[in-house]
Length: 140
Image (cartoon, rainbow, N blue to C red):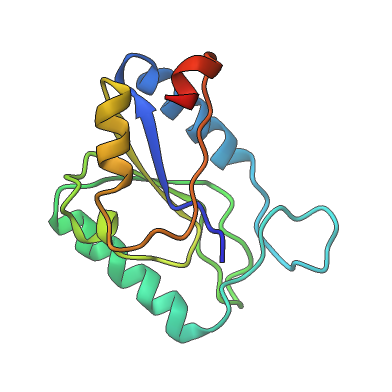
């Protein structure tokens, strides 16, 4: 499995990145995955959909700011809108658990060392990638 669920963004550009993500989420089309115009299909089953909803409620109680895309699909299926979560502590439930849904948790960092510490602060280590303007910093 390779589902990017956490995004670590340098603090100095976080505001810009988050706004661009919100714009993109609002333009994603959710619906029948057999339709070639659709960007994102349904959740696998009702149990998983309810699990994702439960995670979002937990996030709210832990102080999360939750942004959801406007196009959340056909109400007759197991659809969940693309979701962006900010404002959480790294020890929060959403930061520590695998959600397996269209949810992206954003954390900020100030230094490459802090980014590595944040990336390693989870019991899961399924996948990761580094995006940077500087190959030298990325390779450090």
